Amino acid sequence: MKLCMIGTGYVGLVSGVCFSDLGNDVICVDKDTSKINSLKKGKIPIYEPGLSELVVKNNKNQKLSFSTDLKKSIKDSDIIFICVGTPTKKGSSSADLTQIFSVARDISLSLNKFKIIITKSTVPVTTGDEIEKIISKKNKKNKFSVVSNPEFLREGEAIRDFTYPDRIVIGSNDSKSNRILRNLYAPLISKGAQYIHCSRRAAELIKYASNAFLATKITFINEIANLCEKTGINIEDISIGMGLDKRIGSRFLRAGPAYGGSCFPKDTKAIISTADKFRTNLSVIKSVVKSNKNRSNILLSRVYDILNKKIKNKKITFLGVTFKANTDDMRDSSSLTMIPALSKKGAIIRYFDPTGYKKEFKRNKNVFYENSIKKAIVGADLVIIHTEWNDFKSINFKNLVRKKKFIIFDMRNIYSPNKLNSQGFKYYSIGR
Ligand code: UDX
Image (cartoon, rainbow, N blue to C red):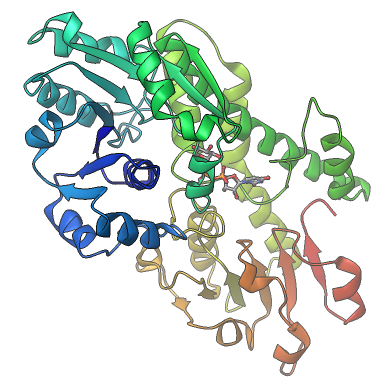
């Protein structure tokens, strides 16, 4: 089929490339000319393992192309995916739909035959209705169908999550688009993906409810970890003991720093805002947002206790600063709270991250990027493992000690307390 992906961010680029790899003809469109030009040269603007190989392969076999000409790309395609950003509106908690509605207006001017218009971007409930109204102003209702098809891609695992989804959710109010989309996704369904057809609004809500639930699950285990620290219990026993219950499931039960990223913070706020609009109080999700916001302060007070409240001139190393491993994304990373707070208290901070220097810390005093683990650690008073990069999973800390052993605060429970304590390190972690 001929697909047009509007927006070449995580969602549009990954989905477009993967659709082309399934044999579809895909045009990825963006108004950012420089982004499109670098994509044409096989240069990928996002950090996603395995993506550049797929871009080059499908570009070469002419299944994948890039363009800035939105109108022509729409005219040449049968299915239009809206994949533009829906960030949190400044000074509010609701989603900013400016880009969505601007694209909807462009689409309404370019329907030369029946098209399916799909919101793959995460959009609040009823957005599809709004898009339908905009397009109906210029087109007869039988010339198009507006469908919700949310993605469930995790950064760093996006290609795997596209290729082996647990489920494909198609929210549409007509059988024609459902039939066409079941056909589009047939290669994934044949590999075991569940295909769900529901109303458009249901599909829009499934996305938000899923992310809000995952954020709730993580916040739940983080709070249980706080209790474990006070009662000498190992949180990992709790995660295993709970996770074996099939109704709970073992994934997303790893205690750590506050959750971050481009989705959980944005989507939890947006679903609360939607519910408030419909006079419904989502008190559980509200408490999740509050608890996660406070989590960095809880971990910071643990750092102050570990250093006996003496922070000034202390040399603190952060191993990893991105919001999770296998991404260069810093959005809502807990390091963005912790590092400035420690810098303000006079600490001297060095950090290493496999994805390199971060401009986000440019304005913070005494915060320095080091380009190796060794350079970041040597001479430290405290080493904080913030992100669970594989690079940090087999460090021989003993070889990196100079005069005095540094303290280790492992915020991702990568190491065994017994092993590091037996090597003479003061070792702290989460919920253990
Ligand atoms: C998330 C959803 O998982 C994905 O389905 C959706 O499409 C986009 O948002 P992403 O934000 O890329 O994906 O990352 P994810 O792997 O979900 O992690 C989100 C945050 O939760 C990270 O800060 C991560 O460190 C944290 N996390 C995750 C935990 O603290 N513990 C866990 O067990 C899992």
